[in-house]
Length: 349
Image (cartoon, rainbow, N blue to C red):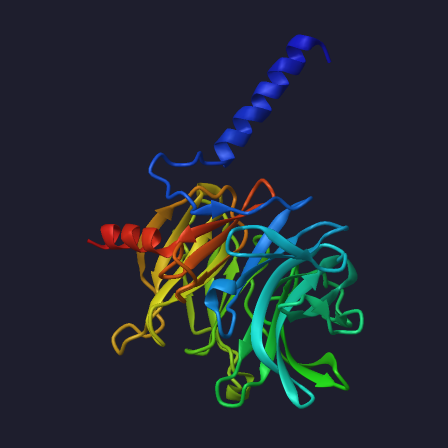
């Protein structure tokens, strides 16, 4: 290829990329801070709230590579610990007070794609407690676990893991496992298989609303699907399907901001537009399970895959909690919720 053809080819490639990726908007909200970089490719964060001192809360993030791992960040964005090496960890979530013998521990659980396992770590010390990992989607042709979310049943404190994969059949795309500890080692048992799938791309982002008892997941390039989280309800019917026309291309990471036990927002990453689409969390008698788009927040994240949110007062920098979002460049962005709320209120009015 001569120099002229090479230049023209490169120009076409650049133009194509610009068509796919939206620039950061001039009015985009800036993060309060950006974390230190991981070596490879960040993908998904989760927030762990310290039980007695919220200013000591931590962010757990995945570094997605064959030599990847989980990273612990403090509220200043500093990396304070890396887990044992993991084979392409994808998404991560946290849960509190897993019963282990006569005590309870907080946990982080991540998918390990190259081994077809989930990995379970104690918090805040980030040590494995799963005897090398737990196989998922056993017996299936399509495995390759990606998305993960944890549901804690309010009635008895039992913890369940919902796992998604790169591909799978509609109707049983997601598998739900119950976590249990035997002789100090965390194990699982399969509880149910459920979940519609459009077949357009994949299902990666999953989020659980513990208080209201719902599972939300992003069927990419299609919309957000909603199911009951408690398997004892014996109901695998889809109860809502929204956001079908609200995204430039991929609807990705889901974060739930809880203003009260029953009110707040569901934020979904509009990945190629570098925005978050905001929906109502609450239900009412007239619009049960109808989640209304109320705002679209331009942020400084680029190609956001995963996100999490909390309304807990963390410290002076995050008095109303935060939104944490993955961004290209091997980082996570911490957003002061006050700025997010200000933009929501402006658009609502």
